[in-house]
View (cartoon, one colour):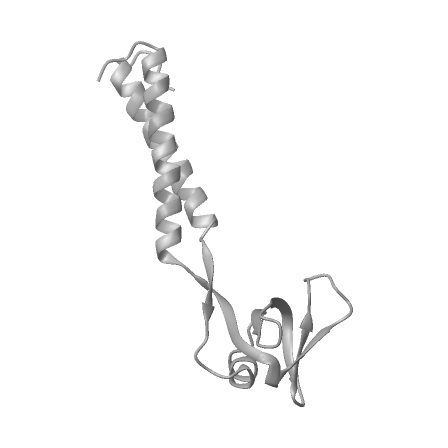
Length: 134
């Protein structure tokens, strides 16, 4: 920090540092959301090869997340967790919806505004504690 600078210059320096940290966090924490795909499970899994899908079942209205999904005959097969060994199988006729995780710009921007607002609020409170006027 600049020792002989005026109080408002120290505030700007801390604010710039806080903004840089906030931008870094925002870049690393891009928010994702589930998006229902308009194609059949067979088309999605064989053409796009997603790492993870969320399947909505028509039989009991539940959802199940499957990692490393594959199509075997008339069944969607995948692992219930990334570390699982035993697969879960869902008959294609029981699939109501299939969703994939996609980047969400709106959620990421909202998260960035929240982080940035927190940084600005923190710096304002620090300035008040040190008697800095704006």
